[in-house]
Length: 295
Image 1 (cartoon, rainbow, N blue to C red):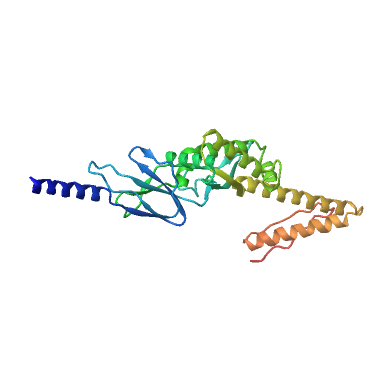
Image 2: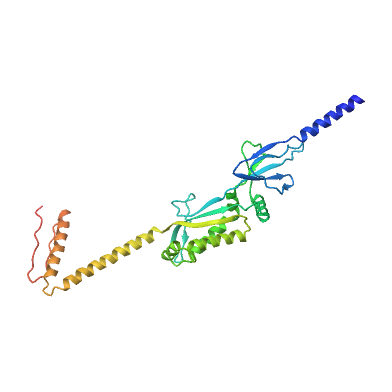
């Protein structure tokens, strides 16, 4: 009987010893972590170092260490044409005149300050909103949440919608470009930052916007071509007016005749270069025929 009791005591002691055995996992220098227990997250933030997460229980229940980066994240929201987009869809913004514009918006976010009570509460909400992924080689005991994924799942589409609304509020490309180049109140930067901050607040996304700035603002190529064509036409009109004024100042008509002969000469030279013969009848009192090519 005594021998049986001793064996039973040894088995019980062994069970307690191995059941309480520690299992340490590291929190990397650039990360912080929370412990996900079978009943939810612990109310504690783990800073870089070793953390005892305990052993897997006989019923399979276990704690998991969930990591997230401490540093801020940068998100690029591109509004680009289908040639440059991965899905071959046109994602450009439209100004008030329905003209598409290409635009990149870079957003810099910071995680809440977990050393403050309110910041710690917000950080815990990020863990609740995130979708943890298993860290390779951890046997499922260590997971990682990406702050980028929290933004993508909770705020991305609303932020893009707000930016599109901002673009449509400008009459045309000239108006949005003026705001793009402007600083301070009324600038495109201020409007974008305000809109993104509103989305984070409305969606209760606990990320802190550090800055938001637009770049690579470009009009549609058709708009660029139209502007270039208009500038060429304006220069042509100016040149014609300059020549007309010059010719009109000569009351004898000599300038006009000389200019006319020069134009004809250029036309004939171009025609001859293409293998054509051209005859011109002048408007001067005596009809003249220009020399023709003998080719």
